[in-house]
Length: 380
Image 1 (tube, rainbow, N blue to C red):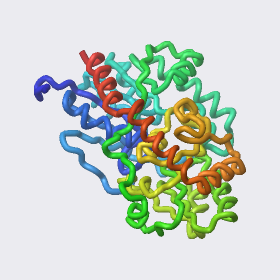
Image 2 (cartoon, rainbow, N blue to C red):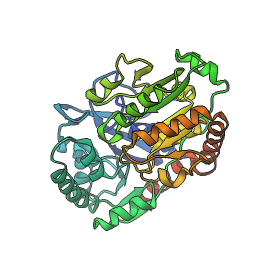
Image 3 (tube, rainbow, N blue to C red):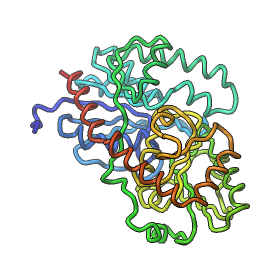
Image 4 (spheres, helix red, strand yellow):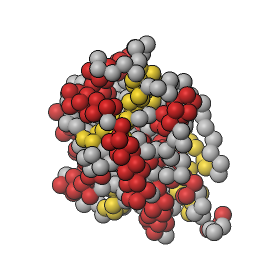
C-alpha cells in the first residue's frame, strides 16, 4: 500500500461532475476509489446547482458558472489563473472534457510542463453538431480545429475503442494513444432477483412490461425517436410503461411530462433499482463512444435495443445479446420492441447473454487498473 508521503498529486479537470449526473460523472465515481490509494487527488469542477457533495480524502474546487447555457449544458468561467495555481502543485493532470475547465487544465499543464493525460469520453465534433439546432456546419469545423489543437498538447490520450483512436489520428492528432476499454461494476449492476418486486419497488405494476432509457436527455440522444416508437407500440399493447431516468433539455423532457403510460423520474443518484425494473432498454443515440449506460443495463440483465453507434455496434450481436435499429427510425424500433414484448423467451435469452457479455468482456477492475497504471507512469 502506498503511504501518504509517497502519493503523487493528481489534478482531475472536468466540466462534468456531481451534482450533475452523466457518463463522465459515473466514470469518475467509479475510478476515484481506485486512484485514491496512490494519489492525493484534487478535482476541479463546475459549481452546478444542487446539493454539493464531499468525498473522503478528495479536495473539490468549484468554478462559478455563467448564467447562460447551450442545449442543456451550463459552462463555467475560464478561471485560468486559479486552475494554473492548482496545476503548479500537480505531478500529473487528468483531463476529462474540453469545456472551460478542461481547456484551462490542458493549457496550464502544457505551460508548466506537467504530464497531461486525457480520457476521451466522446467524439467532440459529433457531440457538438448533434447537440445544437443551428450553425451545425460551423460548429463542426470549429470543434475539429479546437480538438486537434488541444489534444496535440497532451502527453497521452486514453481512448475507449480502436474506432475512436482512428478518428483522432485521421484528424491529425499526433499524441500517443492507449486503448482502455470501458467497463462496468458487475457487483453493483446486477439483475433483479425478482422482476415483479423490482417493479413494485419503483411504483410500477408488476404485470406491466417496462421499456426504459437512462441518461442525460440531450438532442444527441434522440429521445424523440423512442417516444414516437413507444406511441406506436402503445396502440398494440395495453400493459406497458415507458420509464425515463435522467434530465436535460426541457423541450425533450416535456415529451414525458404528465403523459399516459410514461414515468419520468428525473436524475437519480442510484439508477440500479430503475434499471432492474426494466424489461427492455433502448438506446436511441446518434453519437456515443462505448455507452456506459448500455453496459450498465446489460449488466442488470436487460434485453437491449440500440442504434449501431460507436462501439455499441461491435458488442451487441443481433438476437444474441441485444438488437440494433437504424438511426432515427421509430418504425423499426417499434417493431423490435413489439417482438420482444410478444416473445418472452427471446427477451430472456437476450437478457441472459447481455449479462454474460459484460461479465466476460467489460469488467470495471481491468479498466481501473489500466488507467491507474498509465497515470502512475506519467507521474514518475
